[in-house]
Amino acid sequence: MIRSEVLKTLVPVISDQFVVCNIGLPSQELHMLDDQPTNFYMLGTMGLASSIGLGLALAQKQKIIAIDGDGSVLTNLGTLPTIANNPADNFILLIIDNGSYGSTGDQPTYAGMKTSLARVAEACGCDNVVECRAEETVDVMKAAIASDKMTIIVCKCESGNIPVPNITIDQVVIRDRFMKALEAANA
Amino acid sequence: MSIDQRIVTDMVNNGIEFITTVPCKQLGGVIAEAENHNSIHHVPCNKEDEGMGLCAGAFMGGKRSAIIMQNTALGVTLNSLATLIQFYHIPLPMLISYRGELGEPVACQVEMALHTKALLSQMLIPTYHFHDQDDVEELDKILKYTYMCNKPVAILTDASFWKGY
Image (cartoon, rainbow over all chains, first blue to last red):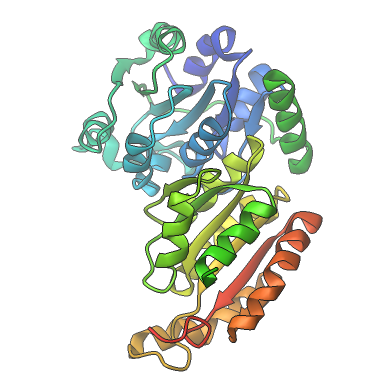
């Protein structure tokens, strides 16, 4: 399974959740599969999906799922100690680890070589780290949502991309509709 | 009231509830005040661009946020400022120690000081420079301005403002 197929299996489970989605193809794929006001699409700023997600989780009560990639986590590796030491039980970080920088042409990442992001997360102090195969991701995500414990999921999948349209929604609209949906859920 | 208490009080009075920081000797007193204040959630971060992600998230979650950092790290935040904070119209007060100004004992700090205002100007970031302690009187207005215009705003605080190192 490639990332877009993983996202497709996840849609029924995360469609009604608040999701922060990583820059580039992951956001474009999620937007194409299931555009929702509850999705915050990052149109820039590689690496910060997990940080934005943690800030959101710490600031309010609704569950926040950050969908990140192995390359993006590698570019902001300092995020894992911050997550570990500021636990938010309403936060799930899903790292879709296809061992490549998908949005730039599938160049290999070190996570696809000797580096294990699950073990890095554990070494940083994250408590609930689950590494799974792509096919298992939907069940692992269901369990993480049900657990009400901060969870880091590392989904090992194949690299590869499908053609997807660009996101043309104005970025301030993306932010505004996300904030309004979150505020309504917290009211 | 100490200058550190004054700064944090102005932040609290302007609704700031989430502060992320990177360690700094000059800003250590403000960071300690933030850590100890009941109505502030303080999250130390490892790098300033990571901190801007945390602040953006906290703001979208309904809490006004601020970052406390050194000017030496301005370079690593430029992409986050442009493509996240400015692009999505997120207000962000940046309380910055202005290393490399008069009184600076470390020569290397001067190098980023020379670029600090030029970079902030290039990024079209409203910038205020606190040199005398009375300059803190403007902080309340600066914070109100930040939330009026939904932009990142830089407050540079030099060694003279902190009365030395």
